[in-house]
Image (tube, rainbow, N blue to C red; front, top):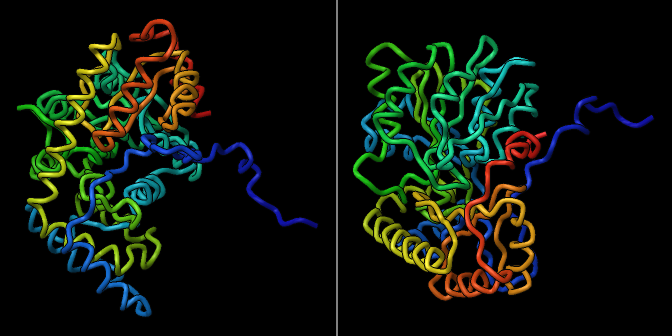
Length: 374
């Protein structure tokens, strides 16, 4: 007799990361291509010699450094094996079977998968017309069964973000019993006078006795450590203590902890890397707009082409030119900012797609706001 598995397991949609087909240029994964600083590489090598020992289970040195930088107590910081793992633990700690997890859609594809893994109900809320999270719609969608709201800001894959004042008003209006998790994986690439600082907004609310706002950040993007899997959550003690109860021990490796500490010490190089990516992102956007595409401004290390039902064909066209990009159903295509040569190759491929460039799709693809998560 075969083993008995969860009866709902077959219906769970697995997380589908950006694939790596046999192509010369991979612009599908939102990875940072710049070389790591020598100091980070040395820290990785030194830490690898200690691989026979278990890592610090609480990442105490890294937690202390992050707490100091963010002006919070160490009890407000939890480090984990990537921010996806922390997303999972947050839902696991807050949601019982059938309770709801809200999120804008289209957004980070792990949110609905995580909800279903723990038996919660994913509730996607369509984006606003400018491809940013629709904060009034999210607020209106909160109901008695809502336990968690994920808000990716800047939003992956569209690159749009709410302003600081709009986000502050939204957080103040969310019922105190609902945990809002602001996913700031791409914050270092956001520009403008009103870029929200989720940690600062969370601290404001904590001082008012509100413990229902937490912030996720990662070392995978700006710090270029995606392969080492390290992220952190900043939250009120009630939240971080709950995550500690469901956290798998030794989730952050010795090498990852050492690399993160060294990367924090190399802040000037990280900032320069992000500025270079932002300049290149804006250059590529101008080229695509000049080619006839309607590309919304982005605050991530990627660009969003809302080309609707043509998305899969466009991705296949790029693949024929040796380039991997990420298609999102019938909504659009995301391309990661790579090297100058890689980006120029993508622009050249985009210029040759079809007889005429395509612009913004109509919002008739709303079915994919729900269909892709089912």
